[in-house]
Amino acid sequence: MIAEIERLVRCESPSDDLAAVARSAELVARIGAGHLGAGPERVVIDGRTHLRWRFGRTPRVLLVGHHDTVWPIGSLESHPFEVRDGVLRGPGCFDMKAGLVIAFHALAALADADPLAALRTPDTRHPLDGVTLLITGDEEPGSPSSRELIEREARQCAAALVLEAAGPSGALKTERKGVSRYEVLVRGRAAHSGLEPERGVNATIEAAHQIVAVAALGDPARGTTVTPTRLEAGTTTNTVPASARFDVDVRVRDAAEQHRVHTAMQNLRAWLTGAAVEVSGGPNRPPLPATASRDLFERARRLATGLGIGPLTQVAVGGASDGNLTAGVGTPTLDGLGAVGGGAHADDEHLLVAELTRRTRLLTALVAELLAPQVGCPPGRNGDRHPVPSDQLRDGSG
Image (cartoon, rainbow, N blue to C red; front, side, top):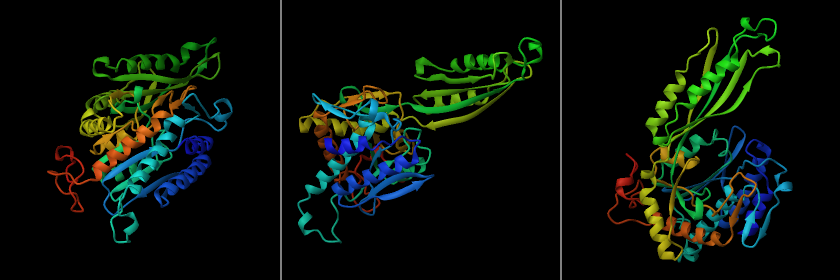
């Protein structure tokens, strides 16, 4: 596993470099094909390469990961790959190239454990029948090209397992905040700041008013944060600024809060006479509520205890992932099944080597149980018993 993670880390794949993402996709495809016995379908959308393995005719369990990273080309020079004292380091190792290797090994273990593999014919059901593995190339910037693909695959399945990195101490991520992103553009009127500033409409001052108003939309009691981030204004030091712009990051726990903030952002109005305010953007990812993960986490916790790798814990996080998208279409979702470590996007990004095998065993057991017929559950679309409890089924999914 370490050698495969090293190969993936050394194949740098920043999200904004389409050629690098394409190279990474080819490497991921080769490694995956070696484990799964078949190559993926390459889905290219807006120049970005996504990979899909689908086993059987009726999807039931979706595994989701991504091979793009936030690290620019050349990061290996300052952040070299290394393994020392049981800790593996390298750009993108934790978020989330190790998760891809875990997925490949977990699914390969299911296929290898098939007692009828030697007798299998083209008409015999594959041990991974019902599994779809989707690895995208644009998660870090918000899945702009893969969102519809992810949602479409999730709607067909009864459960989604996300191979994003684990939380602290290996906790699974059972709740994620929803994300909205906005750009606020302020227009004023330029004038000489020394000769006749009164003739101008200062876009910087207007932006300051707007920033204060936007920040006030946060509600700590409800877990809502509204954060003005990047700001630009003006042209020269002796000119009243004619324009300004700033970005806003919104994190919410529930859809009602996402709607409230969105409505307020759309209703921003200028404070200064002669100024104008234009708002673009909106909800990017819906929240992943705890209810979407509840039953899947209980399954995973029970399996971990049985495997002797417990106790398994859970955590709610502010960061979003493609798990928000799968949960957003109503598919029960469990996130954080990838590597155990820390430092995602940071100089100390790392993972614990000893946990790789444990996470693989857990994922293998979880997928196997979800594929197994469950007594008392309604049949799936192919006539099999559905792999998740009936109270977690989406309308029309079974």
